Length: 88
Image (cartoon, rainbow, N blue to C red; front, side, top):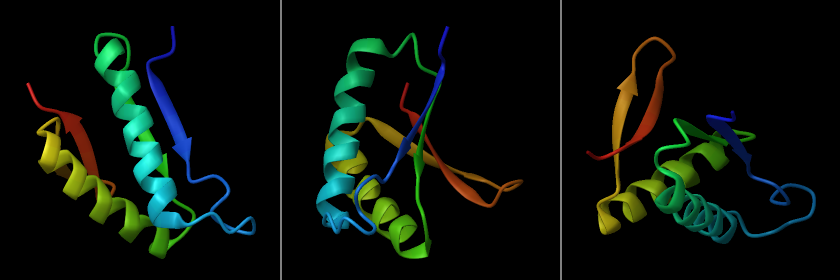
């Protein structure tokens, strides 16, 4: 039973797909899937290939998560990352 999904920022490197648009599409696709499967998925990891990708994901996820009131962020001190979790 799959409980964790890694979602890479595909086609945004050498293929040149716009990073902001790809991030927005990825977020929307993940939220759509999670809304139907909250009880089946524990964690989704957005895989960023560099600092610029990470900053774009962080900015867009924060905007979208606050807008639709679905996710919250927690600082994972051990790994130094922001972890996005479903609001209960």
